[in-house]
Length: 510
Image (cartoon, rainbow, N blue to C red; front, side):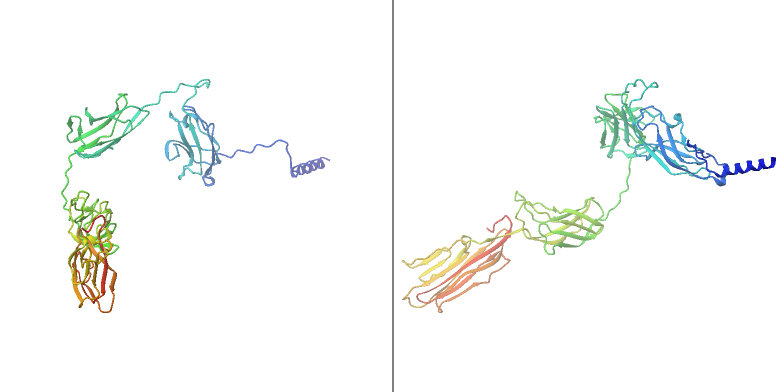
């Protein structure tokens, strides 16, 4: 009996162990061990998140930071940074388990400025401490701190007034008498400031300038000069001080005033080897001129064009600087011939030179220049009649008239430059003949452009009419043409010519 009872108990226990047990209450999972004693089986920690007790604390208020992650044995750093997290201002570390809560007294530094901060949890991966992953949260600090009881607020402190001298930097070397910029910045400061020159580890020497803005810069045109005096070579500081809040000032880094001795370096003058106008041909207003040569090494660089270019007072100024000058390399430079506001530029040969910042001029290079042009008809009144043949019964050369009594004639338009008319009346004995001669002189750079034959009339096959002699001289300014004629009785000859001249825009050919 005893043996059977014992066997039954064993069977019942075995059955109970094989049946799954259901509980109404949830079981609390076991916490993972924070530290694994066997180094060979340690798992590196991994950050999964960060929680702060408040994202909007006030100045001086402590906050609680909780970091979550996978159980680990290594360090993870807390990095507190201003703004976007790129400039760390505080570190805290040595966490041994997850989750963990950082100590209030160690987490929040004594930092009394409001603003936006980035709290970053990051790995500190080394041979002895391993931590991977990262998490971050943005904290915005308010400017009013609560007291310990949380029942009232502390009064807002007056914002601090600050001055900061930015330039010169530490141990800068400024040459005496040369020009430099002094720069400073301010916070919560109004009114004017002044700049003081102070001997390094010594007394103030004097005032450099005053009544300056609270935030800005000052061009020290002659370094070393202060009101009434000039400093000697040595080590100094510049102090920026408020003129209304005298206790508010900043003494910048020490800097050196030195006597600068520069070695004289001989610089070879520029040399022109060739020029190419674009478009090709003579230079005109607006032409781009490419120059090839050497020693084009100093900026700014000029391209000068020398010639006869009258201004508004009918005087000459020379040279003229080309515009939009571009230094491509030490051997190439280009620029544009300006579009002149004044008119009347003559066709001429000009000289091109390159000038560097040292004032050195290149060799001259001669190029053709053609000014802006316009065209005009040479008027009849501007043509001189040197001879008008009078053998006919009626003879007209422009405004010169020879005729028998009772005969009529018609004056042609002033837009006809040269005209001739000869008539031999009915019943006359023999042929009438002769020649007509004219003179035209163009001035102010005007040239003959074209000759247009308007009329060339012979009333029968017996008349003769020839000319002009010499032929029309296109591109020249002087012409003395002659026309020969012969007329039978009761017949006539007639010729009309229009002359077109071209010259500088805004001028006249007379």
